[in-house]
Image 1: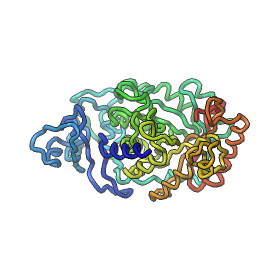
Image 2: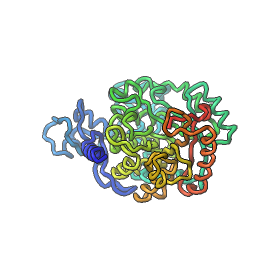
Image 3: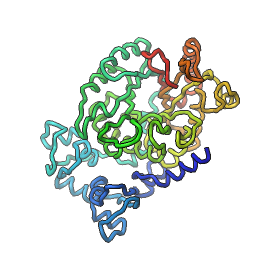
Image 4: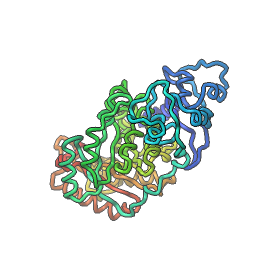
Length: 448
């Protein structure tokens, strides 16, 4: 375990993504620092951050445009090129999409299309001059605190997960309605909707959203397409987080007001999900996701990834409580409205405390192996001054899979689910927004 912690600390110091130095919510206390990666040039970095080569050189005391991999560059706060391009027009560059341009200037895709008499949001060409309409920019400082919509519900709400994508969504939605759930958690795999950079196929997504009309939808976004990811597990992060940001801007723009919340990734504290778990890298991805979703749909909620409760250490995993502490240490609280938590019950009944589980080998002998692990994570929120923000229990349940050490009987499973809802309603309503049960159509034989 100690070796895993040391490795994590080293990894946080050597992260290869851009991350701002952050202070209290609503306050930017330092510049954005970018660490040069293979293939970068000053021109590409300037284009990425909406600045100029000259401004970058001046901010970093460079006398030539030569840079090297691993070099730390300060990205200047204000960039005159953005103001200039807003007044004179923006020339489309290689890699641009209408979504990325809209995000850059803080305007909507629709307003860009109207201002330039465009009929197809996916067709622009290099060298095309675009008129930029008046800004509706949401500054990052304003976004750093959770919006009021995050606490609009005063009582705990119930939801259910859906396990399919496409035609069967209607059948699962029917079951969810019959059982009285108000929230549904549905995977929205990125690779199914953006088949190439800026090339979207919304047909199935449109049908899914239509099937879920009337529910508050939690869209779980992960599964990068092959064109955006060159190595690592299938669900590891994309090579360029900007690609995810562009996609999310398009997704949130299309379903503005229809998708209530977006959960960004699943269990990034596991190597099987992230490749090399690193809290700072996850926060960098979460930041890009948050800013783009809010620019497209300010009322949408952003939920952080539920973390896998585990005692395993590096390189297999980072324990969920340690990973959450690292998220707070690198300023991650600015980039989610609800803290996503997973609450598998493992072998213990729902009322059993983490302390009791830690003392009992039959229940796993570790405080992570119980439904009430959520309370440990809540304490970390409070310790970091984030008590005003609520929790979203995005997965919970008990498995009947006889091959698992923590399997329970079907009778116990049904009983524990009811008792878990009761416990959460009585004990967690002050700080939990919703809790999501396992998919109905799978007979709740979960994978926990």
